Image (cartoon, rainbow over all chains, first blue to last red; front, side, top):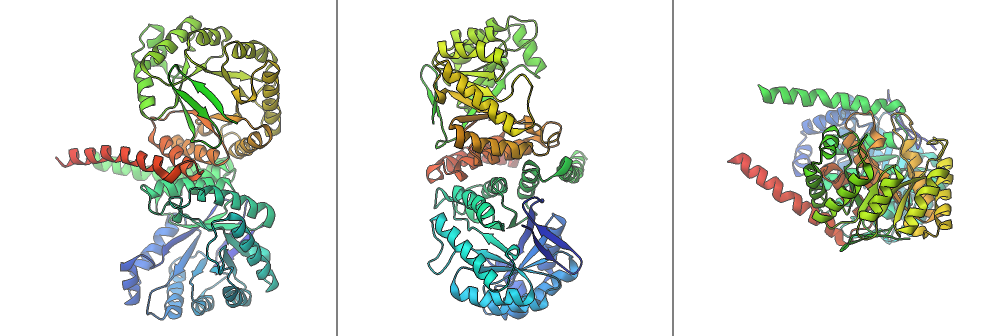
Length: 293
Length: 293
């Protein structure tokens, strides 16, 4: 099962037999006070830098979020998407919990976007899925519902299944639903990693759709979060995860994804790994030369 | 299914619901010219340093190999094992392709050792398994036979099954056989990582025995081997690998194993991860202070 997302000029195909898809997470003011303040004041210079840096670091798509309290989120989200599309050529993931903002984003975006996201809550399904259908987009279905995020992976699987069925009822093809199995912090729920690995296998084998994870929630509250996130990603890729919303500018995460792609059999002749290491090396050498001078 | 290995004073239990077991690989002159030369000349100072450093870095067991051309391998292996056991308290993996050396090692060792290894070749099964039974040891069964290492994982699975059955015929309990599914270099066989992940799951689910891998063969010939080995290990642990012969002195590998243990649900309250990071931190702080002075 393959999911196709596109910008005006570029197509990204997410699928189990392809290299992993990286969706850059940085254009998101949640938890980034300075970015929120700048965006609210109409200063988008940091958005531009983050967009360019993530694409340069290997992001195949960019997630765009404008969730800032007290602003006109639909207008700002549409503006941000237009800006990002004017300086990069990758497809967009439109990220909001406000339905009107999702619609404004869908109006603004060029190509076939990914809507991030719909949950299994009735009210969300009924308001978001018609938009996804109307604009011919794809959608991330997050496996929680009215009762919250279940600690029981069987319940999360059932919610995922319901979202897919409801999407199909609205005429959205199954391949345009990507499931996020939800990752709980391992510091709070000891089995949370194992739960996700099992869910990823079941979603692949029983539901046959693509999957997406946030890669950083798992390490919440623990030391050396980047190492945890990196190994969580490679372990999840080993269980069939096909995309993640993450930060490719972090070298640990980029290395994890490249190594995991190769070890999952998705890197012919290891060319991507070898090329990645060639790109890294000159920088190291330049640094070494500078230090010697 | 749990495998118990012991020294005179220490017991190691390898099992799917326990933290991963690290078998230190360094005491092995293969590919280490200087060590080979020193051991051949009766200088065991490097063996002592390697033994101490690996246990300090978290090795639960030590692999001991004395495979140096033209030496009296049985005598040197027995001597090395005695030395290692005199300065550390961890159980021993006796590593040789020479049957007489394995027997000398089994004579020399205190406690219940791990014999590394037997293949599925008839002649090896018939010469090694009676020794394993006689000394009440455990054994690593490597899934190749007379026809070499098959690139077909189903053939490797069948060899593993045969080794377990033959061991049981000799009266060796099933839990004392640990299977090495064999890791081919991903640079030569694109699917080698995926093959191992699938084999690890099948060995767990269908044969119900513990598993062991060398962690470095997978990266042969490729750049940044340590990153590949580290992510290979965490991905393999996510698929049920219960032990590896590896080098815990390398921080990347130690971090991979600790993170994977936690994400596989084998680190209650994340205490081992937190403690590991506390141990790492003082060193970093001392380094930082020194640089400031």
